[in-house]
Length: 552
Image (cartoon, rainbow, N blue to C red; front, side, top):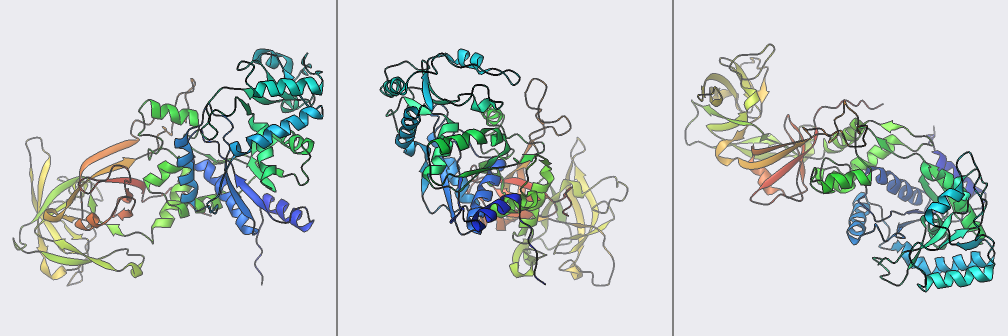
């Protein structure tokens, strides 16, 4: 029986356009404005547009919408390029820039002026807002609306020549000041702004507005389906007006889909910038953020992001997605791919009193108990080990199965040991735990069938590598919501815990920044790509082992 594959509404539109002959080759695009770093929501747009082009054998264009030099920086251009490439959206090395089309956009503006569809307006910004009307009251025509095409053409050319000060004149579309859609009430197409542009330098002193430039860029590149988020739905009539009045033979079609809203995260560029500027986070790539550079630094993988977007799907209406779903996707991606290593975050020394003083043996440890193909490694074992402080109790809590005096536990992959005593300092803090071992239980197996209910991990003390471990939680206080009434962020005071003196097994010294692992019984970790050195290794917790998300 042939499997039925469900198509989302965008795929249905594209297939209908192909079937009816309106589209011969699908062309999609991802057009970020280089005014900040991309976040998890942008990944949805990247993967959706790239995936559709690939699905229908078409082309995917990666284009910078760089029409506003007041906010754009080369730093953002480079970070966005890195993010798109990291996600695996192949653009064949060709990057498009809206600014490359400034000459052609200017020609389109003159074309509209000559048609009587655009005019130069001298109203101030406040006057334009006043004339625009409200949602319940129609706007009124500018007193400059009836200038002749010849007069408008000369004024526009004088604007381009730099004869007028910034903000003194604008070019507006002549549409309908009584329209129920505010975007159609003679929107601004060009403004005067003497700003140096990262790509065109000081060539221009007039710049096109986004709503004018964007449809033209799509049309120039032969984009067939301009896929954007729902906030642009009210802008679609203007998008269509621009490509129709500029008389493109095969105009692109705009389709809107719902944005990705993730619970308890900060995605607004203004808010992230404030966190960065105030020193609350360590830059735009701080692992507590959900910028793509932050997720990459924390240890998320492109495969996990793609899996997440598949689960989220494509919809026409807004909804929020639980952050736990994203965490589920990275756990699911790493569990069979990454080695499971020993790391003791809060170490206390364990001394095996009956183990030979100078003896060192190497025990076989599976690299991943759920994936035998990953093989095994040799790990040193000796008289003095480090264990987690939580794995020993002076007073046994109810149902506690780990070390306390008289109890026997399994040292993972090594031996059975029985606790015989401990040392503590004058404040009562345990400094050393003592035990004896059963030599016949090598490999952690009972020679006589006796049951041992507790199993703990360890690191051989003389061979342990010291490391810094960073435990990340959500930067938002989840119980209070993301924002306060004054618009500030409800910060979680425990969003970062730094452990300076963790002990990790010596094998971890062979890995490099960016590599990830499961630390036994603790979580998934990634060696930090920014702060790790051979002398000072830093590990970021990607995600804990336990999940609150249940896949369908």
